[in-house]
Image (cartoon, rainbow, N blue to C red; front, side):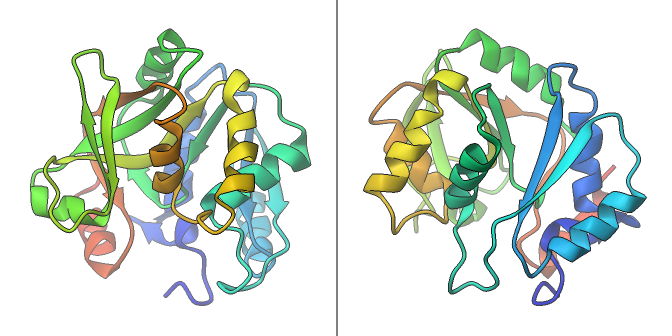
Length: 229
């Protein structure tokens, strides 16, 4: 399904997944611009999508100039690309485009603001701990500080998983560039960055309630079409 069509534009209940993300972003007054980064292969799809979209925030589309899995920049590579392309020097909220959730972004951001100058990530507590092996698994202390992070462990020991949702304060944006210089071959999984970052600074975790679907295969796409509200 996604060889010729980007995952964020797959539909759940007759709406693209990314529309639900934009709806949530539109509720946050502190956000002044939504930046969608994609590749040369799919940029035209997103241009068509933007023409049909109605929302209150300014939306910018960024083409990272890659065309296949062989030359892709990866998730962290794309964040780094946007930081340089847009000369961003403000706090940054990063959301994976296939994250479908109905928890409050305002609650997340209010929590993150209290934890500045540290980075905050969003997490979700799965019902089945075995499913956690597909994600970055998190352990936190009483202050919600991350004390352990494991990317896709074979035997997860916690049902709490990272959602690919990050609040990066302006004062820590330089760490993305540092990571790219040091870990130039691990730029795809955002969890690799979080695992590296926790050795440099404290990271805090906001646990979302409600529904969350990481649309990674037909099973979760079908589940979202059946149950998401």
